[in-house]
Image (cartoon, rainbow, N blue to C red; front, side, top):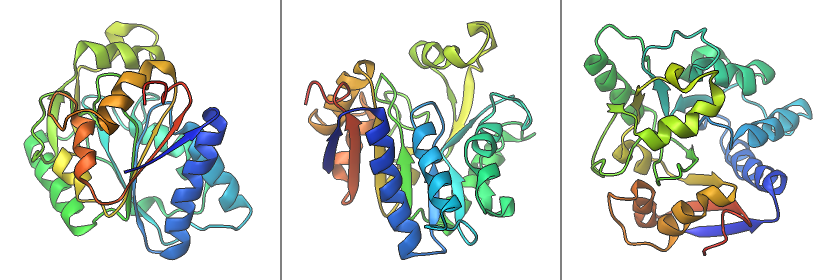
Length: 240
């Protein structure tokens, strides 16, 4: 696990974008595992800029997203489908037919989990981008999620609902369930990139990098992966 500490969020975003850009340059048919939330927004802006400058192209890139809320229609402004289009897909030369997210409004959610796991097994991520929750979750894999888990439905914890409430008008509007890649799906990626910023992530970052490997901190399993890059700002690295 390689840890890079940056001065601030902007530097974190630039360095993370460089890591993903190198994957794209090395393989124009790469499969990018993508994440949502506020942390990667700066990274996506950097990738959009690189695409505009013709440094990289998404023309043949395929993507798989970590997760999606259950119950939000695709056009909902807080759906991750909308987020990805608004923050990346609509601004680069990607074919939307090559983008993949779990379907949080599928009639049969168990069947959708099986479909997405099969897709991930077929389309192994060249790199998987991750944020980390304040409780150590990756994707929506909350503490106590088995390390061998595949795509599944989760009941979001109170802390995660609270973290996400800043994006909604009222906490009562935050979905309480999500569909997420399992930890085994994440660990199957060839390379993993974790980004984190802010002092509220410092404990989770410490537990991920230096704590025991335990399901109490899902991100700690990344210590067992052979190719992980962690890019964090000074505040998130404060306890390392």
